[in-house]
Image (cartoon, rainbow, N blue to C red; front, side, top):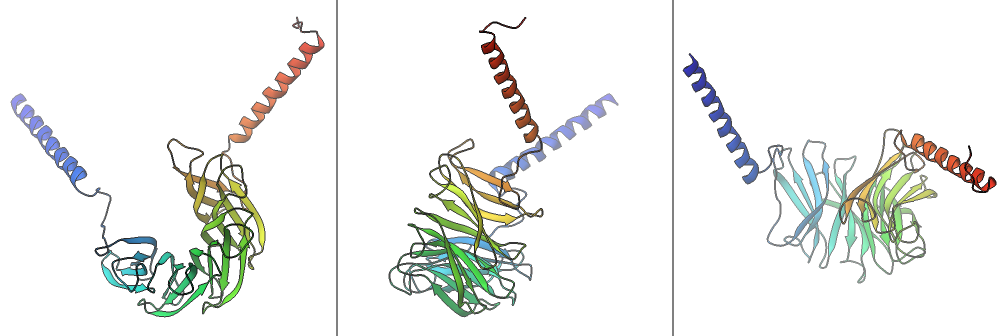
Length: 331
C-alpha cells in the first residue's frame, strides 16, 4: 500500500512538472494567455494606428495613417473589423502629401468622423482636417480649418446637436507661438465658431470631451503657465467655448497630458507623461480632480496636514518661550 501511494505521488509530481513546463514554454514563446486574439493590418511601408472605437455591431474601427496604401506619401487610413478583429474593409483618404488621422468617432448615423492634419490641400502648411463617412467608410464630405501656419486636430467628438467639435493646436491663430484651438461645426462640418486658449509661449490640446453641463474640457500641455518647463493643462469651457477656468498640474520638468475623462462624481481624470515625478525617465501620470479641476487628496491627507500644522505651531511656540526666557530651559 505504501509503495502504491508513493507511485501515485510521483506520478502527480511528474504531471505537475509537465504542465508547468508546457505553461512556461507557452508564456515564453507565444502570446500571453490573457490575449484573446490579435491582428496586424498594413503593407510594406509604415502604418500607424492612433485611435480605436468599438462599433455598434460589436466590431472595431481603427484610424491612423498609412504609407503603404492611398494616393499620397501618407494618408488617413480607416480599418473596419468584425468582433474577432478580422478586417471587413479599409479606406484611405488624402492627397499627394502627408495627411494623418489622430482621432475617430462613430457618428449617430452609423458612419464615422475622422480628425487630424492635412498637408495636401491648402498651401504648404498643415490644417485641421475633418472627414465624414457613411457606415461603409465612403466619404460623404470633408472640411479643412486653418490659417497661415500649421494647425493639427488631435481629438474629435460629436455634439448633441449633431455637429462636431475638434481640438488641437494652432500656429496660425491665438496669442502665442502655439495655442490650443477648439473648433465647433454643424452637422455638415461648416464652422460655427472657434476659440483659442493660451499664453505667450506654446500650448496644445491632445484630448477633448463634452462635459455633463454641455460644455467642453480640453487636456494638453502648456509652457506659458505652471511651475515647470511644460505642465499638464486642463481647460474648461461653456457650450460656446468661453473659458470658465484653467488648471495646471506638474513639477519643475516636462509633464504632458494626453487624455481626459469626466468621472462619475463630476470631476476629471487626466492622464499623460511626467518627467517631474516617478521612478524612471518618463512615467505614466494620472491626476484626479474635483469638478473645478482642483486635485483631490487621499482621505488621510487632511489629518497629515493638521498634524504637521500642530507640530509647526508647537515648535514655534517653544522657540518663543525659550527666547523669552533668555534661552533657559523651563523647569
